[in-house]
Structures are given as C-alpha cells and as structure tokens.
Image (cartoon, rainbow, N blue to C red; front, side, top):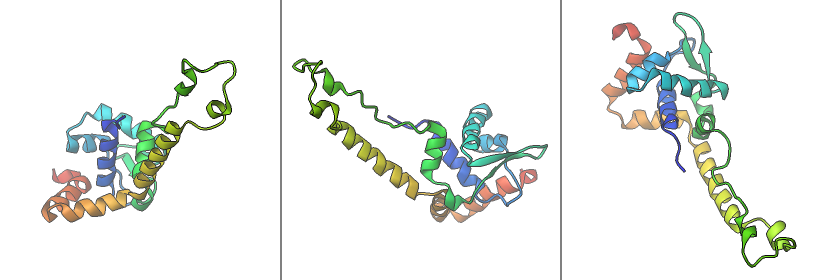
Length: 167
C-alpha cells in the first residue's frame, strides 16, 4: 500500500496557502506552476480537498482557493482521507475459513465469532498510523519547514504567492 503522489502535492499546496492573507485566494495555476505539476492533475486534487471541506473555491477573475479553517485544524490525516478516501488499508477476506481441513458446513465459533488475529493486528497498526497523522497539522508542517528553510527562501516563497504581479 502506498499513498498517491496527490497526497504529497496536497500537503505542499496547503503549506503554501498558510501565508495567504485572509480574504485572498490562490489559484491552482499558480500552485501547479510553483511545483512543476500539471494544472489539470492538481485541479483534480483540489476538487477532492474542496469536497472534504479543507478548501473552498472562490469564484471570479481573481478567484482561486482558500483554506476553510485554520492550519492548526487541518491534519495530515484529513488530507490523506480527502485524497485517498476513507476505506481501510487492510481488507480481511476471512481466508482462515477456507482451510482444507475445515468442515465448511459446521465452522466453530473460533472461525465465525472471534475476530481474525491478523485483521486485529493490521487494524491496530492502521489506527496507530491514523493517530500519528492526526497529530500532525498543516500549522506544524509550516512551522517545521520554515524553521529549516533558509530565511530568504521562505520569504521568497511567501512573496511569490502573495504578489503575483512581482513575478
């Protein structure tokens, strides 16, 4: 299992949106240009983010997208779920009930009422991953990235998005 590249693009884009002043929006074209990705592809990612309520579309000539809530309230898991969906990573097919030595017409409770141990372990692991991704927010990412980025590069990034006429 792996997350699609759309998750990475979404997280990067949301990071760049943190410094957009309230009341202003950023266009998918600018986000796509900045990252060197197809505008069409990124539009599909943003459609998913919009449907999940992470961003909202601002119509008009100067329209684009803005965050629907603060960066402190948007978790990595919110983004993963928006882009990838909410179904479990592990899908238990109950193959333990297919054993050649089992009487298929008279399976014991161990096979019908007790949860599959493999499923239990895999679901626990998924829950740990979800909890970790829920503990990381876009605000946390912003703080971390802008701590390690050279100051001039961070300022240039913010300037690039906030002043399109200066390009």
